[in-house]
Length: 155
Image (cartoon, rainbow, N blue to C red):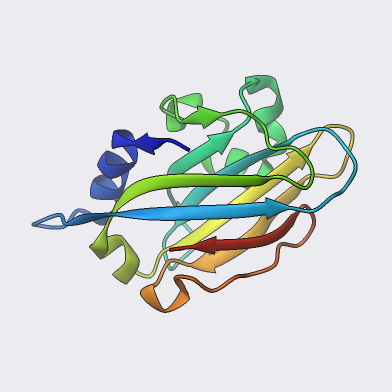
């Protein structure tokens, strides 16, 4: 688990509130036992119109595989400057990724959606494996992913 000051900066930039009140938010993704190598995951935010607003986290350190996070790659045009050093190891099949970030309260009221793209070597990419509106009402509610993510919650 890592707490990232840069996530606070990102959420401040995304929300652009007059007075920022940040609170810790824990994102937890549990992967299915798909029987393959570790998954690359990226957590990024879009606005209510689907426009990319920023990257919160990326799991998987080899940049040559980022193009397989196809929704994120398309939104950022593969700009590694969007990652800002926010990376961790890939996540093994059946394992859990838990990330704690400080996010602005206003981010949870702005109509943003969290997307998680997933990619596994020699398997199909899964853009937007999870999509969930970032709202207080959705906090704590588990959602299922489409391909590699068994369940995802944020609190």
